Image (cartoon, rainbow, N blue to C red; front, side):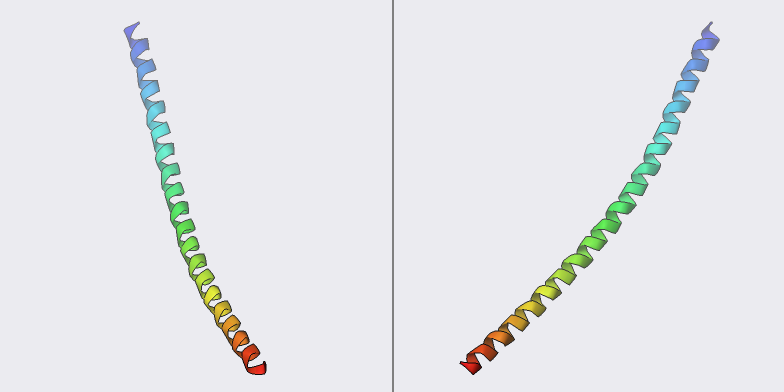
Length: 70
C-alpha cells in the first residue's frame, strides 16, 4: 500500500518538474520576444524623432519662404 503512495508522489513530482520545464521554456521565449519588441520600439522612436526633425525643418523653410514672398 505504501508503495502505491510513493508511486503517486513520484508521478506528481515528475508532473511538477515537467511543468517547471515548460514554464521555464515559455519564460525564456517571452523574454526573448520582449527584448525584440523593446529593440523595435527603440528603432521606431528614433525614426519618429528623425521624421519630426525633418518636418520641423521643412516647416521652417516654408515659413521663411512665405516671409520672403510677403
